[in-house]
Amino acid sequence: MPPSIPLSKKIAATTVKTKKSVKKNDAYHDPRFNKLKKLHTGYKTLSMVAKKVISAAGEVLGV
Image 1 (tube, rainbow, N blue to C red):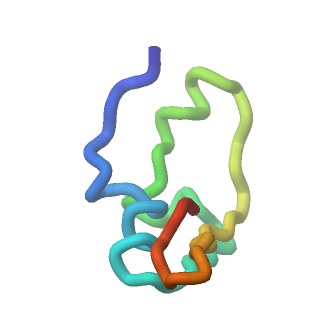
Image 2 (cartoon, one colour; image 1 turned 30 degrees about the vertical axis):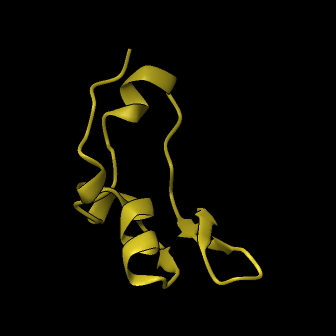
């Protein structure tokens, strides 16, 4: 099982808190990016986008 990382230190959490999307051309240079995941999957993320999903009432449902 991958190590647990506090939600407050993740890119998705930033998206929820700020209600703004996050775009990274090189995810490995962002301290919020979980670099340890590569050890478990063997997959290297190069770029990423975190976008909020909101309800009709304006609540964040997910990222």
